[in-house]
Amino acid sequence: MIGRFEGKVALVAGGAHAAKGDLMGFGGVAAWEILKGGGKVVIGDLDDAAGEKSAQQMRDDGFQAHYVHLDVTDESQWAGAVSKATSEFGSLNILIDLAGTIDRGSIEGVEVDSWKLTMDVTNMGMFLGVRAVAPPMREAGGGSIVLISSMAAKLASDYAAGYATSRAGMTHFARAAAVQLGADNIRVNTVLPGWTVTPFTQSVLEDAAGTEWRNRRVPLGRWATAAEIANGILFLASDDASYVTGSELLMDGGTTAWWGPGPD
Ligand SMILES: NC(=O)c1ccc[n+]([C@@H]2O[C@H](COP(=O)([O-])OP(=O)(O)OC[C@H]3O[C@@H](n4cnc5c(N)ncnc54)[C@H](O)[C@@H]3O)[C@@H](O)[C@H]2O)c1
Image 1 (cartoon, rainbow, N blue to C red):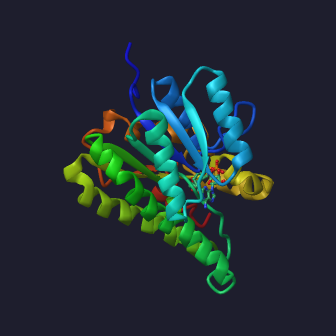
Image 2 (image 1 turned 120 degrees about the vertical axis):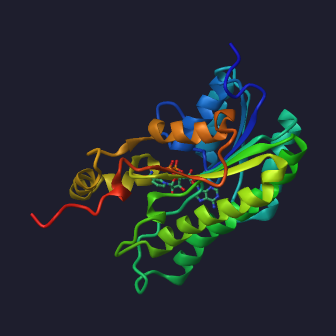
């Protein structure tokens, strides 16, 4: 049987947390599924130890995978990651951009440097990433770009205005990229996860009361697993979504559909 990702080469930016035995991010879970589906993977991240360990495990299991250091805010490092994919595997068909930082400050409380970092990693990162992968995807006859936003793109809060604003920027940028790259058969979509158990949320999960409040705030009554969010990423990355571009996939257990609890 031909796998869903047979012959496809994917760059997973921010996908270092993919080692078996460690808690995986949804990029890590998605990377393994692409490999099992017949694809090849290049992981790019700042976390070299985690990324090298993950890629080594993948190769030990007989898959074709590499790790490359990638700071998504640096244009030359995007060029290096794309070149790693095309030189090792011959083409590039899929980009999944998951790089993200946590910013929990209020508008008046946040440090300007923290705000800039959030915007840079999310918004500069996606811009440089799409620019870097468009030429090889065009050459390959098309491709799929999946930008990982957040349900925070839809909700305002008393904290993390920078994080939420950067995530909303991602959804609109994906529409612009979908329009500009559609003629090249390059699809661009966003996934908007809700609260999910991953390395990214470890500090939040350590707060039992905050975790329980979030459980009550989600109509499905619980956090997502990384595998549940990866399912949506994989759908958009694959040819199953061949007519889907410029869209947002909300995967939040119903959280943004709800005002929240009533007065009693
Ligand atoms: N876990 C959640 O509840 C949740 C919910 C909504 C959105 N998200 C978003 O999903 C994405 C993936 O997160 P995850 O939960 O799978 O956790 P994760 O920690 O596995 O993924 C985030 C990765 O981004 C990398 N990163 C940070 N800055 C970078 C940079 N400048 N260049 C390259 N890589 C960089 C980190 O090293 C890390 O590996 C993040 O962008 C996060 O904001 C997470």
